[in-house]
Image (cartoon, rainbow, N blue to C red):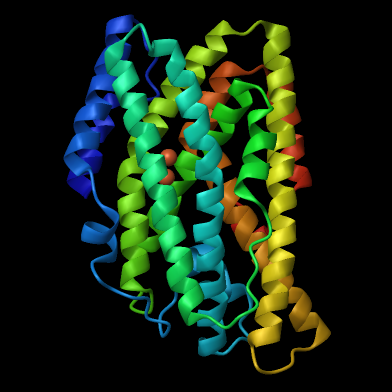
Length: 332
Ligand SMILES: [Fe+2]
Ligand SMILES: [Fe+2]
């Protein structure tokens, strides 16, 4: 896998696209890698396996289970399995609007650069496949977990709301998502014999294709940026802040639902302080997984920072600061 990463790296998505040919080379390189690493859900990821409910689904670095040390090992596993199930559902949700947006921006290339068009068609096709994989994982999780789990947001409702915002803002949010998928893969490869091998493969295979998406998203984000007037960009920054707040709203609702499900199914009672810690840790874990592990990525900071003014950066920073990141996540 490292070999794939090394071959992807020379494309250097951070380098400015100094000419159309440079950009074409990058699209062509993405297609080449995308074809080489192409995987299938059943043949490569699932491979006839089922979930082992004696293992954790999410690594500790993502689930933040160590912040609730009063849980027994079995409770800690359940805590991570609930989050794994929510992980599958959240990705099924975000990939709905990402696929639609990429299909929409591919219009720019319909009668133009056919290499760019092919790269974006593959991107969309891969996100459709990922959605199917995450639906499959949700069904497998449901089959082995007690009744009562409820994923609250509706993918099409969320996609409709997201797609009503400016393309610049949606592409910025998408870059955050593509980059945090890579941070999640890195967390999943930490040595941990208690992590489900099937989930490890989910992180691995998803990361392989998301690496190309991050490159494409960045090219398209910069193309879109170059089209905007300063006033339009300023409105787009406002849109991005609203999108991140909307994501956080979803995370708050789901963290409450998942905490209630955990407490209902844990089979013992917890003190009010412990209940509060379980809820707060879930919310902190979701904020880390779906917001901060991407926006703290150096590439995200570099790309976004190159497109906005200091005043706009400060506006985004203060919006993020108002979404309280758990202290343990700071500087992680
Ligand atoms: Fe994906
Ligand atoms: Fe993606």
